[in-house]
Length: 418
Image: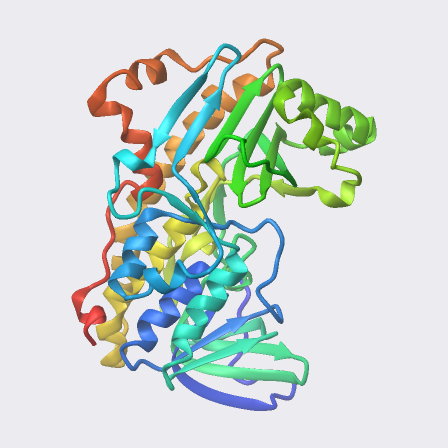
C-alpha cells in the first residue's frame, strides 16, 4: 500500500483547501463535479492531460444519460453539437441480418444512442460547471501522492508544469479510469477476469445508402463491428487476446483482405486503410474492486470497475456512479461530515448493477464472440438468443439493458432544485 506522510519530501508551491477533490475529468468526474457545483459545494476537478482530445474514446451517450441530462436542462443544448444517432444493433449472419436490439421500442423520448465525440461531451459538461464560482478545473495536473493521516485520506499532491502542489479535501474521488493512479496509491487491487479478445479500431468512409446503426458480423475466426459516425464508420475488428503482433506481422494487405472476406459489401472502403498508424489497439479488460472506498476516499467509474466494450455501456455506468455518488454524498458534504457508511452506501447502490452487466458481457464474450473467434465455421446465434428474439416480452430485453442498464438511476430532486 502506497501512502505518504503529512509533510512532503519535496517543496510544495501552493496548498489549497476544498470540500471535494475529483481526480480524472472523464464522464464520471465531470458529471459528479457539475452535480456538486450546482449545490454550492466547493469542488476541484483535476485532469492529468492538457486537453480532452483523445482518439477512439467511448463516444456513446445512452438514453439513460440523456434522461439524466434532460432533468438538468442540458439534453437540448447537448443536441446542438454535431452528432449521429444509433437506434438498432444488427447481427449480420451469413444468410440474413438479425436485429438484436431496437431502441425505438424501449424509449419514446430518446430512442437512440447519441454518438458525440467524447472530447466535445466533456467540454460541454465542464462549460456548464464553470458557471458556478465554487467549481475549479485544473488541467495538466497529475496526481502523484495521497495526503493521508491516521488512515484517512485528506487530499492529493499533484504536479503540473510549475512544480508540486497539494489540495486538502474532505473527500477525494478517484475517477481516473481503468489505470487509476488513485486506486494504485490507495493500495486497492482490482479482481480481474480474462476476456478472450482485444479490439483493433480504425475508420473507413460511410456512404449515404449504407445501413444505419450498429452492425456486427462474426464468423470464420473473426469479428467486426461498425458504428455509424456521420460520414464515417468507426470499425472495431475483434481478435483473440494477444494476437495483434501475429496479425501485424502478416501484413496490412492480409489484414484488409481478411476484413473484406468477412464483410464483402465494404471491400472498397477497406482499401482506404493504408497504414498501421490508422489502427488503434484496445486491450479489452473486465475487472472490479471489492471495496470502492476508504475513509476520505471513493472510487467510481472505470477506477472501480473496468467494463468490456460489449454493449458500449461503460460510459453509461460511470455516469450512473457519479449520479448516485452525488445523491448520497451531497448532504454529508454540505454538513462537512462524510462517513464510511456514506461511502459504503454509494457502493451498495451501484455494485450489483455492475456485477450483473459484467456477467452479461462475459456470457456474450464466452458464448458468441470467443466461439466465433475460435471456429472456422460461420457463426450462429445461440438457441436461447434466437428463442428470446421471437418472444415479445423478452425480445426487447437487450435493448433495455443497453439503453438503461439493469437499474434506473435518477438525479435526486434536491439536486435538481438546489
